[in-house]
Image (cartoon, rainbow, N blue to C red; front, side, top):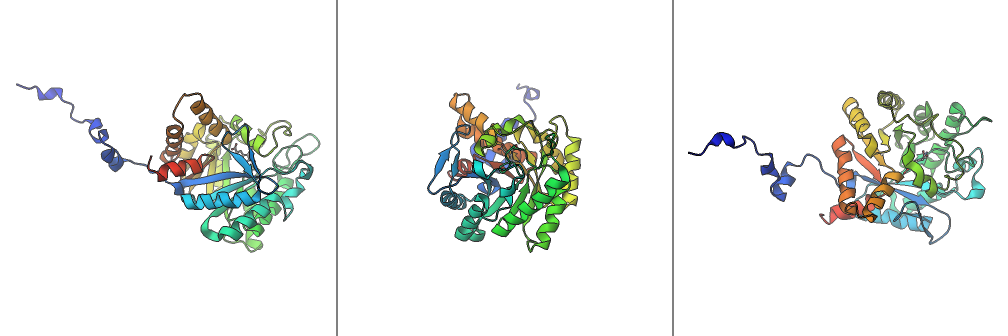
Length: 335
Ligand code: PBG
């Protein structure tokens, strides 16, 4: 006689046995519509400058950026994020170039919007670090301290400048207190009631931003660190306070940054608040995946897709990733 008591009641592997079944019970989906593609802009025409610290990522001149936007549209990516590499002679202690209606950022926004209109969203970063000679995100006093309220006054003008050029989503990445409310009011007063704000609400003082600072040319410039305004990686309750404040001040969506080391923060934010949450898989994370793949430690495509689905599982509505176009191609080809 067969002893049936030796069979497991439940076999978890049954639903894992075939790909149709795995697809059928899958709890999380990743699609190109979940991705935001960060792009770096540089001066000139027909320029592509590879970024050594980010293998496979380049700075593009405005004409090329318009083509990148077209590629994003054709891949089903809903939004691109722009970051300028400001010429050295246009950087200053007060970051005034951020307010120039003809700066690189504004020219890129106008060119993309002229070519593609509402076929794609354009997200723009608000912070002064690509424009300051000292590499900090705001105005500093003689001791190097980043001044809060004085900086917010400039960020407000920077945000309106970007919205005037046609930006769809303003994304303040500076971590000054009170900037979301101030920018929201200024957008309303300046005829931009439908321009969204995606707040970098929980942005940590992270070692993973190194390659980005190379990309926007601020690494060699930065004096000191950003721990006086970006969050301490040890903290989690504090992230919830940041998010609550930004929602109260009018944010349409919030971001957690960096990405993978902070999945717990994403989950806590998602469980607590009914607002779209985005993650920024930052430059150092991209570089780590590329280095691992190049060293043969893992399959590049599998690493990329596994990390991106992890953000969806943690509760994200979407992910900013330098792998966005590559991932969208993989997803469309069904791999
Ligand atoms: C600027 C800004 C940074 C990043 C996005 N916006 C750098 C920083 O805060 O020093 C980092 C993005 C990345 O590493 O990919 N405030």
